[in-house]
Length: 427
Image 1 (cartoon, helix red, strand yellow):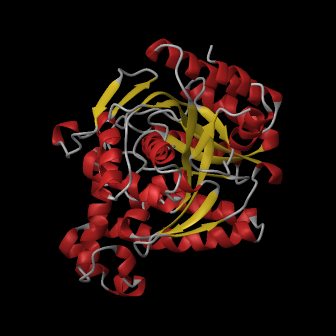
Image 2 (cartoon, helix red, strand yellow):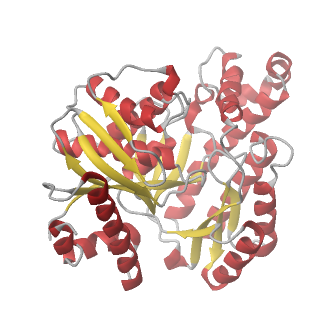
């Protein structure tokens, strides 16, 4: 085993990082020690022993707390980084080549001398790696080769944005190895979004990347190109509640068109007022012109616009409630957001035989009986719901969800106070 890791794993420095990123406790420390140790072992098995300086990088997943599908129309959101993350064991190289060995996937090699956009790579991990290097190079940052083994606890399709965590991770590696860790969290998020839009071919907003990059719980306002980010402190566990996500199943793979239709339809409504996005439209003016707009674009775009205006305003109420310590109001807003997503945004299920999220939300509502809250989580259509469960009833809730949706489907989360981090193995 690598001598750097042997010394680092038993150091106070590593224990401190684990407590900050994943939570306190001996069991948490031992789990992370095993996880990071396995990553180092895989690195040596893949690339051989006797390497120079190795370094860890970590980028968190994110949970969306308020503002469902508002970011892409320049709205407000409330989100938080979580203690599920994507981690890498990395060695810098001088061959102008990136080699990434992600657990469960074939190794990927990227030649940095050729970073043009390639449509044939749309939707692939290769596109995310090439794109990160390409965007950073275009922005004037240094890029270069490295070897990495990567592992993630942000499960694909979990609604916690494994893609954003991966994008932020690659940007952090290139920043840490070649730029002296100078890229601020906003710029790193913009880089990741551009990668997903331009190289990956997905028209996403900036919510996922910004939340993963910033760390903590943050109120995000995308009204201008320079997004406004405000920290919002709240320890749900200290207030007696567990923040959970439940993976109800379903495949996101064939839903790109469903996701893309939401911002497109919202923008079609904005266009009826001579605007580009809904944030530029006066809500009162919209209400007065519903008959005209629905005749022009149809009912679903109008309903989705209604959701945007309501949820955009609701984020302000949620932030105020958290800061005032009024969890009853906060939970009411969470539930209202979820109801709006179901009825107006219509992203709980896309087509027949994809009602898992609806089942999860309704089972949660019946279980909680108004104590806590439940809602759709993330993009919707298939996958994950979010719930706030009294700690005293958490075991029973987990048992119910896992009985219905399978073992490991319900995950209690911790809001992680830091975004992407670089962790040199220094005891």
